[in-house]
Length: 205
Ligand SMILES: NC(=O)c1ccc[n+]([C@@H]2O[C@H](COP(=O)([O-])OP(=O)(O)OC[C@H]3O[C@@H](n4cnc5c(N)ncnc54)[C@H](OP(=O)(O)O)[C@@H]3O)[C@@H](O)[C@H]2O)c1
Image (cartoon, rainbow, N blue to C red; front, side):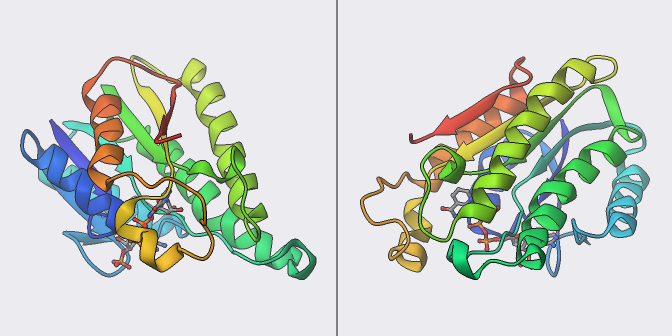
């Protein structure tokens, strides 16, 4: 398959590239690294990313995998509307735009795989923006799966904290069990290489 992986140099993205590149052709995209630069919060740059892939593979694009998304972390009492827009514009609408624009480039049998996280199911202090965005992503994927044209599929991977990020986030995730990032990558493999659609793959919780 020909697969675009957004965030291929990130903690989760690297593991997904490792898992999928054994069997497939990959284009990696991210804000500063990869085969092509993309800012998921900027629709024009998403369009450019798809045009780059189309130039390389024509209309033979099988899967779009996103492992990127920023939100704002702070205690509820400090949060402003602007703070919430960070997650809404980046992690939520960035991924929604990847899907909406990708529909014009993806093969009729293609798939989208998006990323969320544990915090809407198992909240931490300071995580309301993450929780709201993750919940919206679950709702979007569930509803969008019914309206996907042709045989296009869409799934969401929702991992708990991964061991490779534990040190960085340890003060936020006390008491949480961490998973090896390779385990999260398997859920991306299931989404891309399997047959399911409209699924939320909760990994490690
Ligand atoms: N790490 C965890 O334990 C964990 C668990 C569950 C869910 N998640 C979620 O998974 C996602 C990725 O987490 P991570 O830990 O892998 O992050 P990370 O290691 O910080 O990597 C972030 C990646 O995103 C890219 N990026 C950042 N902003 C971008 C933008 N606007 N447009 C395109 N690419 C952009 C970076 O590319 P450049 O280096 O080129 O800037 C990098 O490849 C986040 O949404 C996070 O909430 C993470």
